[in-house]
Length: 245
Image 1 (cartoon, rainbow, N blue to C red):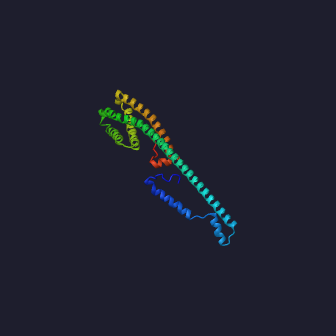
Image 2 (cartoon, helix red, strand yellow):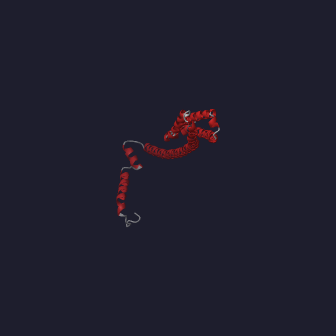
Image 3 (cartoon, rainbow, N blue to C red):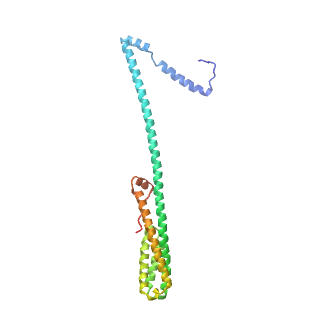
């Protein structure tokens, strides 16, 4: 040792002794080239064959070491590639999820506008009923149909149920309109005239909002059903939306 008096910390002593034992075992279990030549001479093996064997084994060990190093580098590159693919997949999944979610929010916003117009039309029905009260005996069935159609809409929970209820409202309002055309008394009612203007305006706005809603649904459905977006859609439970016809 360069400095035999140098003090070794106590916690290092077990590791030092273990490593030294390993070195000693390797030393005692190894042979020098001269030892191998001498051993070969004892069994009449020429020196050149011993030297050739030593050289061949050393070359083979070097080749194995190089192969192990190459395999380790390959594994490292493979891990890097897999990690990169995984990271890209996570980023793409998140981006696609946000894209579909945003499109779904657009559908919800468009439906809210449709629902506003449907609600407005439903709110006009009590006024129509009030106009017919003076002639209730002849319009009992019409009043009942108006009431039922409005209640069906107010009780509807899903877009499909509201769309079905809208059909009933259409029929009820159409029946009232036909009755009003045939009734001379109602034709002269200014309140009816004002309501007809409101109904016409509501129908026009409803047509516009329904068109926007259907366009939003079409864009959303394309995102949900197209590959590879459909993989993310199925994973997170995004489903196809129905058009409001």
